[in-house]
Length: 466
Image (cartoon, rainbow, N blue to C red; front, side, top):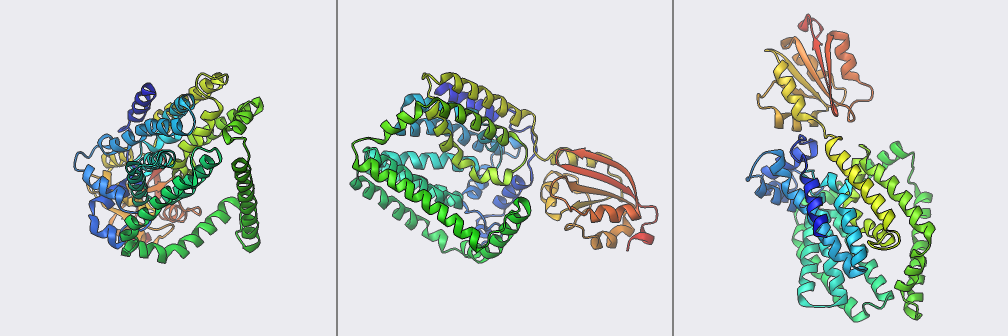
């Protein structure tokens, strides 16, 4: 287990500072540097609670390099290996715990977010610590574990709103332990007082202007998500579809509840039933194929908006795979195979797949910049990482998608224009590129990972600037 912890830490530290900070990382750093007042009033970021920004504000005083800034996140990611081992020991046995420790140590998804200056790796560690203390409280109640459960859950909620899903996860674990006769109703009643204490600890944040602003903007955000789902996946969430989803969820809950009552009222324990299921060879091989598919998707450099939201639940999913391939069991060969694939995929994530190369882009542009040039950045929010790495303070202009008016207003004064575009978040109609192409000559195009830079020469700026 200690070997897995050390290897997990080494992988997460590998080339930790070799990649430049991308948009969200720089945004986090800038938000933390603005001070606590803007966090509590909701004037900067209303979509995340303040804990990560408070931690980042304190840590950023230690150093400014990418390695130093990301170091705590990497350490929390390595701590997940130890925490998941402790949790799996309580829920299963040491063989399963050792298996899941290896899977978490080499997981490319967890390694990737352990090298990103965001809250997701810390949230994964707090989620495991909260669930571990919850299980200890359900099995061996004490004031120490009750306080630990409240502390870790409160910290997770102050870190990310999605931590509320842990209540459902832990409630499911409580039902499983009850069905397996490893807890009783009295202990569950003791555990239920912990979420009540968490609500009291979280109440001050619920009364802040920042949370009120989140609630106020929720309908527009919800509509934007529905539109995005419709465009990306051709899904229309109307009333009939919602009714079907509710019915499916109701049927699933009924089945789970019925099985739970069966195990509670019968002498057959849940552990005995699950062991019978694990002996089915087809299940191990089917799970192995599923694991390889998920592994490939976790390395595929797309879908980060979804991946980052579910990454804190991934260690719990890996526990299921570890239960199927326990260390030292007859399925250990499958475990060795998936561990090998995980390690290779993690190294690919670390060494091959870069983040948006803003550091390289700005450095190269600064070397080629000439007096009188103008840097035009589309879309305008990409000025955040550009300004972070721009030590020369180059004249630049950020514009929304396809907005040519501000460019035309200043083109008289700048015979050469550097157009900086994001290769993914860009105007699908390329209106600004087309507009510049009609008024100027494209001299050069340079590609960096995630970023494209085009140089335009305007022969008579004032004549074509309108």
